[in-house]
Length: 115
Image (cartoon, rainbow, N blue to C red; front, top):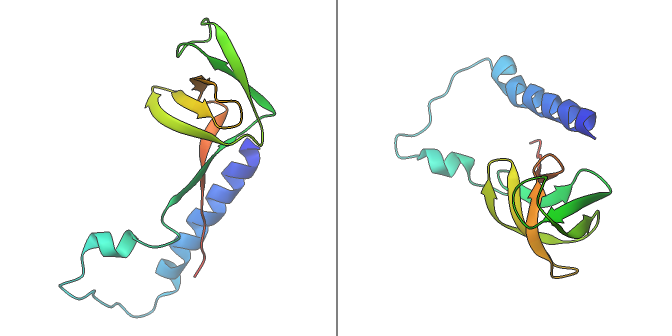
């Protein structure tokens, strides 16, 4: 899965650089255009949180030595409330269990739009 994410990231970066390479004439943006307007759109938002494995242990504290309070399975919907280092405090919407999961297995999906 990580190899797929790396390949997709490389493809996106290549696609983003392509218009810069193929542009033959320079054009300036109007003076009244703000930077925030250039980055707001349906493609510039983060996707849902997803699990990178079949199951992740939900723990009582943000450490691998803490007590396991549940298991977050692939396909379960969950909400991330806060992040501390590489740990995320979540609520599993399927079971209602709250706790910490490692950021090694949980990440934000990214929307990619090619214009």
